[in-house]
Length: 247
Ligand SMILES: [Zn+2]
Ligand SMILES: [Zn+2]
Image (cartoon, rainbow, N blue to C red):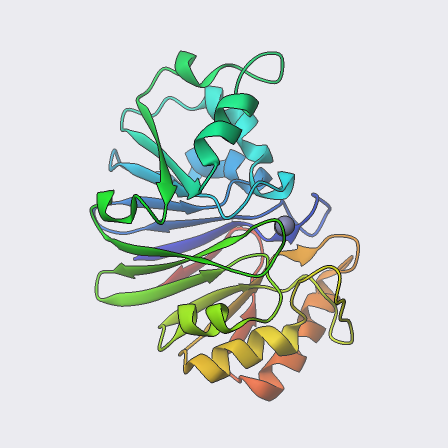
């Protein structure tokens, strides 16, 4: 299985990267985590006609702004868009005129599924879990080719995040805050908290993503975050756009 970090910024694009999107290619399926502007590169990395499954965590723009490019893709396979409760309503309101080409005019088959109600509708094991990021954010856990992958997007530290990552081979976690930051009103993770979740969960590896563009203005700052996280959870790396991980 191959994981490609298409976009690793949080909030907006800068020279450090595009907003959040992660691509996972297994032998049979193409899985996409969130659709920030990194999503616009999907056609560069898609190499087969296996079905595509997108999992949205929530509806902040940095997680779905890339969907305005849906019309440029000429998928021959079915494209399933899934997300937390309310996804169908949000996507039908957004992917239409006057914002962009309407969903029903796309030249390929699409379907919208809501989680966790639809979690048995996928040809692989996946679970959606609510995280702590008002009004909502959903994390996902996948069982793919014998490996457990946990995706913990926008959230503050919470028990559900630890449960989501229990014994995972890989935890992909947000890292919006700088090492010294914390906010009770705006729940996100600093690198030490992402590392704490990985450690408490007994995960094997931690990938940091979703670096807030206004705070992480250089790649050096990501390296600092990686260094701080490694003090708590040594097997951590700060992901960069277009980085490839083989599992
Ligand atoms: Zn975000
Ligand atoms: Zn958010």
